[in-house]
Image 1 (cartoon, rainbow, N blue to C red):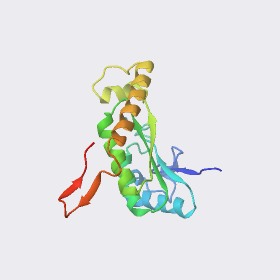
Image 2: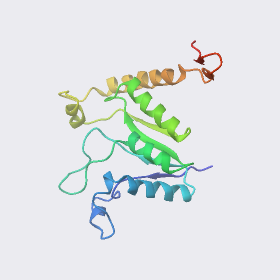
Image 3: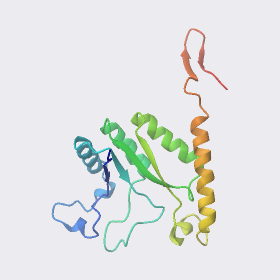
Length: 179
C-alpha cells in the first residue's frame, strides 16, 4: 500500500513561484488558500497534508515570502474544512515544552476526529537558538536526547487520561473518574 501526502506551502516550493501571474504573493498567511489546497488533496484521495515549520523565518525575505502561520493553528482550521484527510505538522522538541505541545496536538486530534500527525524534529541552526535567547545551538547529542525524552513524556501525557474516564453521568452528578 502506498500513502500519498501533499506538502503544502503558501506560494509553492520554487523560490520564484510567488512571481507567477496566477500566484498570490501573500498566500502563506491566507487560511482560504490552504483550505482550497486541503480540500483539493482530499478530493484527490490523498492520505494527508503536511505543513513544515521552523522557529525562524524561511528563506531570504528579499527574494520570497518568508513568514508562515503556526501549523497546529492552521491545521485546526483545515480540520473543520475537511472530513477525512490526515493533518500533519512539524514541531520542534528543542524549542517547545512537552506539555504545551502535547496539548496542542491533542486539541488538533480532538477537533479533527483523530486525524492529527506530528513530524518530530530537533531543529538545527543558530538563528533558531537565538530566537529562544540562546547564544548557540544545543549540541546534536543533547537535542536528540531531549527529543527522545520529549516524545516519551508526550506519549505518557496522552495516555494519562483513560478513554473511559469521562462518564457524563448527570443523575449521579459525576462527570468523570480518576485513576
